Structures are given as structure tokens and as C-alpha cells.
Amino acid sequence: MTPKLKRSILYWLILGPFAVVALFPFAVMLSTALKPADEIFVFPPTWLPTRLAFENFVEMWSATGFGVALFNSLWISTAGTVLSLLVAIPAAYAMARLRWHGQGFYRQFLLVTQMLSPIVLVIGIFRLMAAMGLVDSQWALVLGYAAFNLAFATWMMSSYFKTIPKEIEEAAWIDGATRLQSLVRVFLPMALPALAVTGIFTFINCWNEFVLALTILRSNEKYPLTLQIFTLVGGAYKINWHHVMAATFAATVPVAVVFALMQRALVRGLSLGGVK
Amino acid sequence: MLDKTRTLPALLMILPSVALAFWIIGYPIYDVAHTSLHAVNRFGKVQDFAGLANFARLFEDPIFIGSLWRTILWTVTVVGGTILLSIPIAVMLNEDFHGRGVARVIVMLPWAISLAMTAIVWRWSLNGQYGMINATLFQLGILERPTEWLANFDTAFPIEIGIGILVSIPFTSTVLLGGLSSIPNDVYEAATIDGATGWQRFRFITLPLMKPFLQIAIVLNVINVFNSFPIIWVLTQGEPANSTDILVTYLYKLAFRYGKLDVAAAMSLIMFAILLVFTAAYIILAARSEEKGA
Image (cartoon, rainbow over the protein chains, first blue to last red):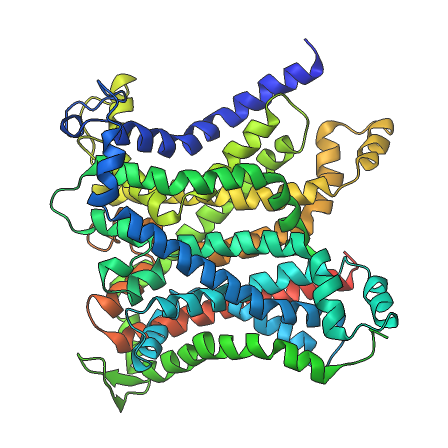
């Protein structure tokens, strides 16, 4: 046996239990989503359905209001991410490229916003939104998500910005470009990988957020996916688990594919943004 | 040219972020502090100044004290378990073996499901009659009668901790993996030539070089886990009899179920203080390691 083969067997033996637990929810989603309705509540429960009930996915779409919730999730997360990046880019640039009074103070200010999550301030946020007439408004979520992802986005991008050589911008100025021109034409294109990784993380944070959506939104047709699916299992006397699992599966697979494809970039991005 | 002090342009550049944060984070901090010192009626209207009465009521409340202890238990066990498991996982994923690409994807997968949805799937899996956990344990002959896993503290809370660890591993091992891949290979080669064993290489090269990454992973995990709401809220809502409540879930109940905004605000402030102390400790730690040149 080659050392690599030996190592592979050993590592998979160690990773095996974790892999089983990590994949377990996916197996449950799939198993339940493909069971005909009358096989959900059968005792003792079984893993395999007698036939594959693909119609669950079709029924789920209208039964759970999936389409509307998907659209809500998409637009709220996109708007939150764009706003967060728009606000964080200049801040990250100032952190990475300029020296100024109060820089250290600003760094600590970011740290404090990073450490707070919406849940700790949920009362204050709710009262703020109530005073501004933003209860049940999706814009309240967009603004909140942008604010709570700000510190992370600024950090990630400023540490990446520092790795872009200053000389490139200076060369652009010598060629007669203004600061703004050099920023938009030269600097940002080079920083694109950082914007992409930061954008993906922010988007996923918004996509998965729960507490603010639960607190602020009132009407079902405004709910994002997470909240919509939670509502289905919230207080209902009879839960249609085959629809719920079909919905969670459909909501999860696209994100899982993005993670699988981006895995290498995410490792690099996090190690850059996290520490340096 | 770039290194001149440029305070004004910098202030203009950070202005939008400061404004946004002051509005949605800063104002609520002020509002929570203000509310915590006043009585609030049932309709959410702030009334008379109450001094520290709301805080006093909290410390007489056994559920609050219980939640506080459970939050410590929850944070320590979830973060501890996550770090202990993530180190070997990251070390393995950093080495060449068959199927490493697949293993990396599997390790990251729990990250792709939102916490609330993860919790929903587990709640269904743990269903006492029809859940797949019971089904599997029946088939393996481990269990004879159906078990209501979430109906009592002794099984519910450890399960919640386990799920907390499961969902924290992807982020943590990714940060650690990023750190490991930045360690140049020749350091290990030199150590091997000098006769260092595998354990010695891990103990004297990997761990010290990983220290900043471990630090950041611990800090971010403590913050995340301390603030983590969906797992417990979806699985048990802190029940039975508040026995699985942690501070965040009890806070939410106080505010939005029992309508005690004043006491809940006091609780928010206490949590804010705990997080602040922790962050300050981190800043001091980080400053010290920077002085050492680490």
C-alpha cells in the first residue's frame, strides 16, 4: 500500500462520522420530500419511499408560497449586499490606503458593530423601525442587513486592498487620472476578487438571516424563504413535512452548489480577510 | 504620496458607514439603555424613570439566572467542541489524500443551509414518532421504544449543542485551513530532516503558526455562538419549562411574548456589556501579540 492510500483510508475513517452527520440533513430532506403524503406519518418510519413522489416538488411550490418567498429572499439579499458593499468600499479604501487621525478608533468602532448581532438590540431596532413606520417593510431588513454586515465587509476588503501595489494607482495619477478615475478604472477592477468573495459571504448572511425578519415582517407575502418555511412548521396543527422538506431542499441546493464551486476561493478569501 | 496623513478625505469615505451604523446600531443601543432605566407599559410606551429596578427584577428571576448559566455552558461547549474538531479536520484537509476535494465540500456543506432551516430539518428528524433518527436507531437495534428527544432537557440541550458544533465547523475549519495553507512547506521539510516526529511538527510548528488564526476563530465563534438564536428557537423555543432557554431566546420571549420591554431592555444591556468585556479582552490580547511581533 502506498503511503497516500494508507493516509486516505485513515483520514476517511476519521472524517466518516462527521461526513455522515453533515450529510444526514440532506438525506432526511430528500427522503421526506420524495415520500408520498400518506407515507410520512407511518410507524415505524422508513428511509425509502415505496415510490418517488416527485409531484411533491410541484405541489410544494404553491402550497408553501415558495415562488414569492424565493423572490423576496433574492431581492432583499441582493439589495442588502449591494448597499453593504457600496458603503464598505470607500471605508475599506480609507483603511487600506490612507493614514488619518481616528483610524484606530474607527477600527474599534467596526469591532463593536461586528460583535453585536441583531438579536441583542432587537428591542431598540424594533422601536426604531416602528417610529419610522418601517414595521412590515422589507426595506427595514435591507438597511439592517447592510449595517450588520458592514464591519465584516470592510475588514475583508481592506485587507485585500492592502495587497494591491500602490504603484499601479500612482502610475495612473502620473498619466493624468484623477483619484476617482484611478479608483474606478484601475483599482476596483483589480479588487474584483475581494468584492466577489465579500459579496458572496454578505449575500449568504442576508439570505440566512432570521431574527430581524421574524421581528419586523408581519405579512406572509413579504416573508423571505427562511421565515416562510419556519412559519409552516411554527404553530400549525398539522405540518405537511413532505412539502416543507421539498421546500428546504429546493432552497438549499443552489447555495450548496455555490459553496462547492467557490470552496477554494472562500478558503483564500477568509484567510486573507480574517487575520492579516 | 500615499502615506501622508489625509484625515478629511478619509472621514468623507467612512462617513456613509458611520452614518448607517449609528442609525441602525447606535440609536438602538441608546434606546435600549434608555428603556432599561424606565418602566414600560403594556402598549410599549415608555413611562416613569425606574432607576435600576428592571435590573433588580432580572437578578431575582430564576429563569434569567438559569439562562445565564446555560448560555455559558452553551458557548463554552459549542466553541470548545468546534475548535477541538476543526483543528484535526483542517489539518487533514490541508494534506493530500484521495477524495480530498469531496471531503472539503462535505465539510463545508452544513454552511450552505440556513441555521433556521437546519434546525427545522433536525426538528423533523428528531420527531418522537416519525423521525428518521428514531427510524435509524430502530433499524440498528439500538432503540426499542420511540423517544421524544426534544421533550426533555437531558436530551434536548446536548442535541442542540451538537447541532451548534456541526454548523460552526465549516466556517472554523475554513479559517484554519486558510491559515494552514499559508505555512510554507519547507519549514516542515527542514524539521523532518532535523528528525522531528509528526506530533513534534504539529506541536512546535503548526500550532504556533496557527495561533492568530485560532484566536480569530475563537473570538468570532464566541460572538456567533453567544448570539445564536435560530437553533434553540426552532427546536424547542427554550422549552420544556424554560429549561433550554439561553439569554437570546429568553430575551426574545420577554420582549415579544410576555411584552416586558423594560426588563428585556435591561437584559439586552447586560448582554451588550458581556460582549463588550469580551471584545475588550480580545483587543488587549491582539495588541499584546502585536507587540511581541507575532
